[in-house]
Image (cartoon, rainbow, N blue to C red; front, side):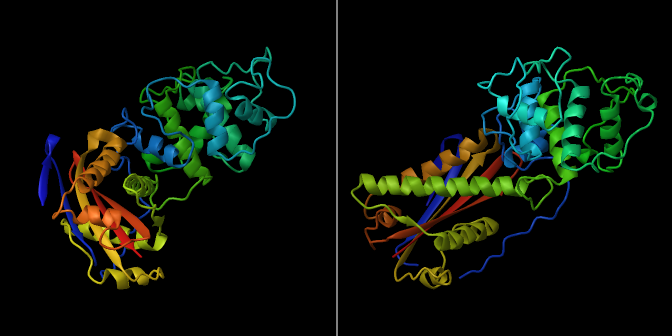
Length: 393
């Protein structure tokens, strides 16, 4: 059936009580893209934002936490930068020794600040303080990055500019951050693709070393430093992990649907199902097949297909669904779509209640389930989420 929802979103549902296509997932070439995929991770970072790929890369690498907003135009303080540097370059925690007078042990960023201090990456101000709440300047950012990278490997940032003032008319050679700017820009000049450069100056031959750096600018500098040093926390199939971010959301949606199903079962006096990785593999593959074809369908020989994953099924059932999601709805839109489909399945009444019967095991007393999701980009404003629930006993 084809039902219409508000905002002109549509979904389709099909079910069968007993139900092989083999699907090879598309590989992603290691390319450098300046734009994000169609899943908006932060509500203030649309896909066309200048710093989108860097911010989302840092999110996937665990340098940033999941929050509703990123605030890319805001400044970053020295304590926040310390945490990003320690996390991004995988520096081991070290809180030993004398503390900065203005960074007590209960300070939010005590650990990363002490780690940088004990590593010799930073030394604080002449008065002995660290001043964790001070905004970071472009020049200071280069010192943090260059010193941290060289602490990991002295060979990093060895392409320097001998006369930095010839490159930037506002950076005299005796500027306190001149050596670090020279190293960072010198190394960036060796990188041909502007998207992957760590830092560069302005078109008027200035660097503006004393200007406060924005959170967006910091994201690019740190993300590209991680790519340059190859000190990633997690590997990627494409340059900035866009494919992995999609896969992570799909995995989160699969877990969310599993929780919804068991909550419904328990509230209806049924026992919780056991999640099956083998059934998930089958379900996820089928969701990809439906997305590629652009229509809902069911697998033939479901029991045999499940048993290729070694699950030992002797009875099986399958629910499939589809929902469009507006890109502007962000990640929450996908969770809302999955919940909408599940609630409509559970609202079915006999004799048209095949989905509900599968969920509650009323046709067959299922014991295991695998949920599989596939997110497909439809156009600039809409994506679709395709889902499969494969049950067995």
